[in-house]
Image (cartoon, rainbow, N blue to C red; front, side, top):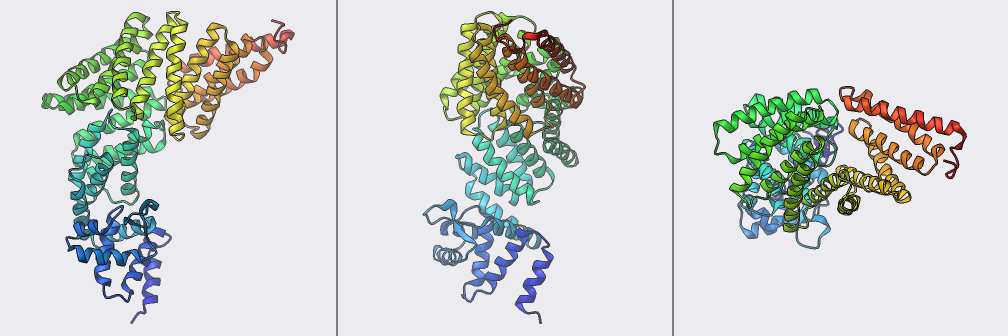
Length: 548
């Protein structure tokens, strides 16, 4: 007969290099060999404790369906093990199983006792099913996906749509973390896996990681899972996700195809059930995505038509339910997209009117919930859009004021979450917009400072993700703007290295995304400016600010 040591060594050997499984195995042997007569009941309690992210005696009681006295005994026994710790370092009587052990135990339970895992997860989900707190809603979805995957997929889809445009970034980030745990541990399959992949990918996009390879892989995997399980709505969302990823990588023609597929499915679903406001909203968003790629391709007439549909549906939904903050935000974004095309067409009056609506709605939402960083970001962007039109109209004082608000809000947001690449990128753009107006006003020292701050951020982002064509392009443009101010100060020799780096950077960008025609034109312009700068330096007055 094998000894306990032999059993342990055999089980550990079967775990390979997987530290989580090894931790779970060791915890099991520690409990089984414990001399206390409670060992079998403690083993059951450990099942519940590993299913939960945190626990106390009452949570054990409710998940296991046992008496308060029994739960207290088991809780006290669990507290004595080294792999059980105070939750979050608090002094309350709340505990959690150490992360590696908890994940290993969960995985072993799913492999060896799947019915038990599903049963306890379903019980845990029931504890949070009617909670209004967003963090507890995350717990509900997490356990429901484990206990009843198909139902969990449906509820995740509903909650994600309810949160779209209205949830705080920290709540969406919490959901993404919970879903990553399930995905990384291979707890999900089918529809549940498809929706979890997409929610995590949308969170990556919101943080400025839209061109990351992981987003593309998630889109392809989710699409295959959606098609295999017949989830048409998930398939449409997967096409949309793929389109966003392709567009971020400069592949606008391929993005166009993806968005058309999303629009086709969304239109079919909306026609099947015209009274389904959720599907109407998805159709509106699909029109918006289509408009975006048409705008990128220079088809402004087509873009305005698509954005017009986006606005029309969004306005109808917002009027149906004025208290729905997500739909109000969607209406604001639709006004912004229409304004952007009108601005490109030279219709500055119409653009200012559209951006004014965007600003008005964004300000109202931001005042409703000052702690909602996403809505604060929308308000900042709205100020920027208004500032851009005012600058084009020659109202530099008004433009500087609007861009100043843009900068102020994004500086605060970037300080709150330095790891949010999307906010860092917006902060760089805000510095550039302020710098641009100062340059036009002749405030060259201030402009140089603003462009320098923007360049620092753009360089850091480009280094973080060398495969992000958009960020590489923004670095090239930032280098050019800083060089331009140096030339305006009469310092072409100082500007020359920035001009040279700008051209090199833009060449790399064009090589990454040759289908983006406008970037090729920008490269030609940067090369012409480099040639002019070299000519000035060769003329012999490059180093003296007073000599030109």
